[in-house]
Length: 348
Ligand SMILES: [Zn+2]
Image (cartoon, rainbow, N blue to C red; front, side):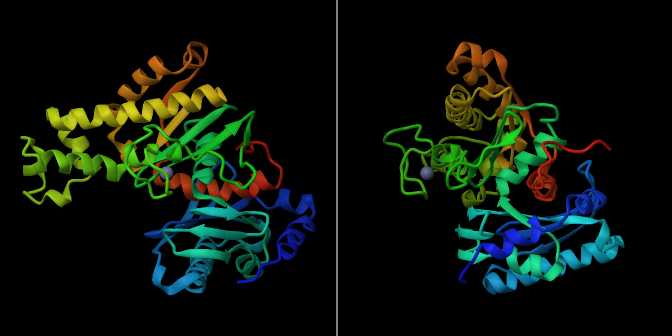
């Protein structure tokens, strides 16, 4: 779709600030490759109403955008919110974006290239509409309403199929020249490491995300190593995933333990590098793999303590994310406030 940013910007700039302040409710959309959520959220970050639907990737950009519109309509109508109560819409989109143009530049999970996302939704609802990367939305939610409340300098990592992060410094989200700041997943950790989807090799993501954990476990089984993981998946080795490894480690399986320790070592090294660069007070860790909890966090903290510079290491805490899967949709909603110039959540 051809794109002009003008229409996107003008509509929000013309909205008088007074109107925004009267409108107290926020709409958020978290678009993922598997499913999408839309929610009505208040300014204290509480979800008032929500709807979820599978993302029909095969229906293409127009189909997916229509589903988003439908989901938002449902949320609004079920909640009974009036137009005057709605401050705007925030969209959390995976992949590379250009938020000033309202554009998804590239999203591998959705097979999107240069898709105009903001304008059709803004036109449909006639509300100020904003977008950001999904991980940055989750970071905003954790910073304002979750594990990072009251903290001005923080990193929020999501570790799942991939590894992403958002960065907040001096209370402001950092976006960078092409809105790609925080790509810790593609920090090179091993110079001759395994190839990564980004084209590089030895990236943190290729070494420590869910698929790397699963791969290591399957390789161990295929080498004939004795592990409880084989029985846990009924002998179907390709069903071993990161959560099976975590479960086995918790049961004391030495092979699974070793994999968790190695994963934590890679993650700890990447996080220590990040800490040395940006000097945060807090590192928040979320995402599917992080559901392993203290099993993974404790060794990460140990590695960070060993590898980060002393002053930075002493000033930082590594904690689990608090909002779980809701972080994406709450953060997308909070984006409306952030983009309208609020530097933090408003008091309840
Ligand atoms: Zn990479």
